[in-house]
Image (cartoon, helix red, strand yellow):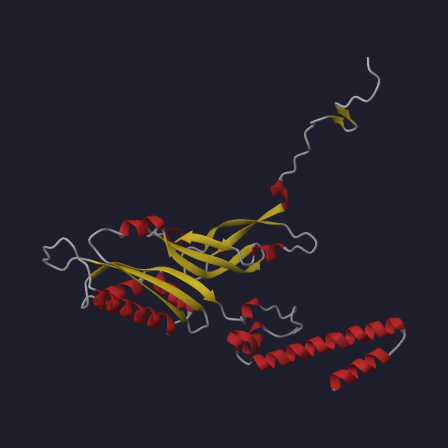
Length: 294
């Protein structure tokens, strides 16, 4: 028998011994996802996130998370071909509060509308709501046969297509420009914008299956009071409404920025005083305060 190490055995025991399996879900928590107030059903589901560990905060992992939900699940009806995107903006307790982030039609609905012997007309426009949200709306419509028409095809002339596209853009711009985001979403749920376009274009060429097929969120307002915590901003005793006067929709930004700078400067002075106390010298503080006055 050869003398030496048995390579098949290791210190820990047999080679290929199974490692202790740790359940990944043991480190995660479930959070409820809440839809905005404009929908009938508020509870739309649950989402997972890793628990707060050290500097990694659970709420930071949830903010910005996008959920795609069918309108049938939000309104408890049978219109299942319209999908809404909701983005998490705030976390309160175990609830993820969401806001509108976009809309789309399902693939099968779009494919079912595209047929032969008709003209498809598309238009898109970038519009800003009254509360500062920049949206890009895409509209689609299809020509149909006139009453008592014998001919199989119903193709629109190029000039008619341009007129219909212009009308689509005008109506979408008007409906969004004069309303805030909540009112726009309330119009997208029954698709009243598509019905208005269909009615307005009857004199140019009869249309059917006119829908706002997609809505993209391009830009959001910079300042919103709901995302501001008075304690974090060092404004203890201030209500959210008071801060909102400064920051909501970018109003009085200069005044708000001056207040924020003053708070930061006070914090820096306190920091330098603490350092000077530790070092036993007040020269640094006096020089810093003189620099600030300058």
